[in-house]
Image (spheres, rainbow, N blue to C red):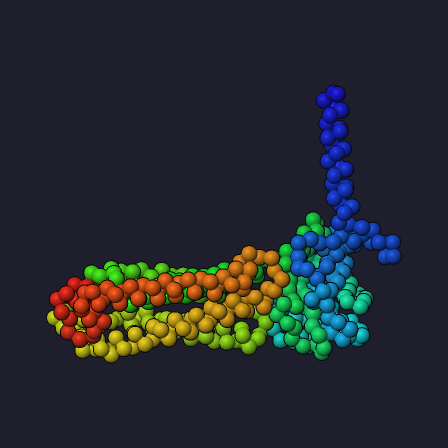
Length: 398
């Protein structure tokens, strides 16, 4: 076989495989004369296909979205789909029961009430309902985008009247209209998983272990407990700070307002203030020994008892509230991304949070138990807040 013949055969094989791939994803529909291409890699129950309008040099496609399975709206329910990446901004075509199509503009988390009006990105919508599914077909145009652009679609379904949807019955798709690939709100999944993971590390491991070292003064004598406590507080603060910065800088408008999310949000704010108070109490603690004088020149030693009580009480309160906040966060993620294949969602919502919390607190409990044994063996009340003995001063850090 000659070299030219081999190249021709190889080219023919490549073209055949490409044509075969396209034939598997794009099919001509004789009823409307368009070639519909199904997108891939998105949520079960949401089937999206598109057809590029021939002859257009800018973005102009027909989109057909079918909702079935656990996101089927039912005969009396509603469905909405259209252009947009979040509830903050978008244009959607809505279908409510047997009513006619309505075009609405998304401006926030609440139920949309404003009509799409002029400049609406979606148009010419039709509805097709079956026993266990509903299909909305609409035209999506953007004169400022290229023909094969990547665009975001937003969708939601619900039962009964047109009201707030369930956390798991909504989502976004980022569709590459050139290749047909789609990801189901991938960036927002990663965003929520990153926030949840950082908070879990901070309040499920580092800060509890830091607090545990303060109850193991005999197990880790000669200031070693204070070193462990300080390192844990420092690392926990860094991770907690990173999670808070991520929370501020990320776009969190996509959350659904539920009682669980509302409680998680309010407790999270409370934990931030409590942690800041605890951290400042640790930094500005009075000296233990009167001979050392006032700390920083203005904090008298006589305040040591009051400081100790405040620091000892506020610590457990902060940890309990933070633990509840982390657990509620896992519930929020589980409800919001129900059905997601993301490994982070599966870990956080599938028991990983509870497993880590249990393991860390078991370790702390064993450490405190061993510390009690060491305390009894040494015979020194190292937990007192009065005048220190020589041995106690050597054992405790100041």
